[in-house]
Length: 129
Image 1: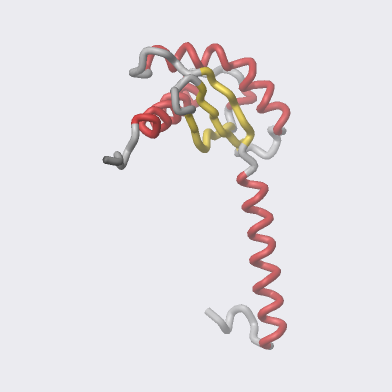
Image 2: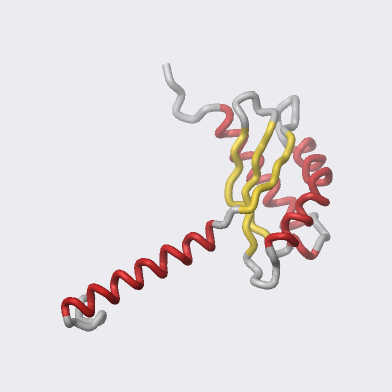
């Protein structure tokens, strides 16, 4: 019998919620002020949690965020240990999520396709709305 919402998924949701709250309220490192956690994936045995993040502030570089998360790793794991409801707290591994870059590229492709369509049909983009 398959379960609709496995334990690992519940743990992922908990880790994402807890770490997001800690980063928003408890972290003093200015480099993490514009950081957003986008997803968490845990291993089957719950020993490792891959935390995906991105930066909202344009002045934060990827390298700066990587350094900030590396230096805050122990602090974040300690807070996770206080609030997480499992016996062993997973090792945290932070990965940059370049979702914003890929979404920008996708937007450009869509805009290009729309403008090509408009040129072929001879209609203005406002006419199709």
